[in-house]
Length: 83
Image 1 (tube, rainbow, N blue to C red):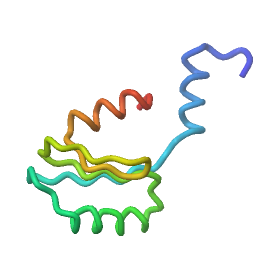
Image 2 (cartoon, rainbow, N blue to C red; image 1 turned 30 degrees about the vertical axis):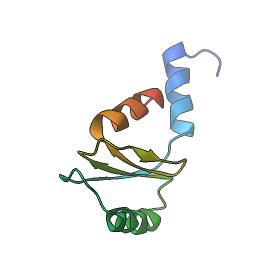
Image 3 (cartoon, helix red, strand yellow; image 1 turned 90 degrees about the vertical axis):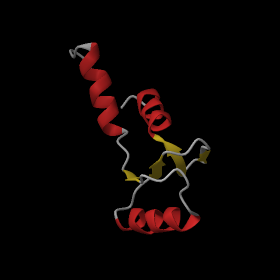
Image 4 (spheres, rainbow, N blue to C red; image 1 turned 60 degrees about the vertical axis):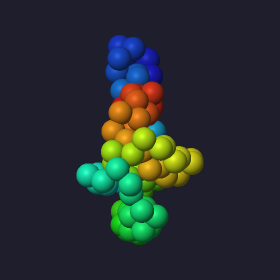
């Protein structure tokens, strides 16, 4: 983009790469596999690219499409993704 400030180019680039994330927050420290299955079903309905089950867990389980994680981990990921 010519004639745009660097901040604008970065912002527009972010818009083009926008992803839809489904995020569910649980108060438990031990989410069950059924919790992740329910989240995945709901995420499919909104065509989410990624799914995150956020809880008080200390064990992070993540792959390219979904994660069971705690809030600090998710916030760090969001920051690293530019978001």
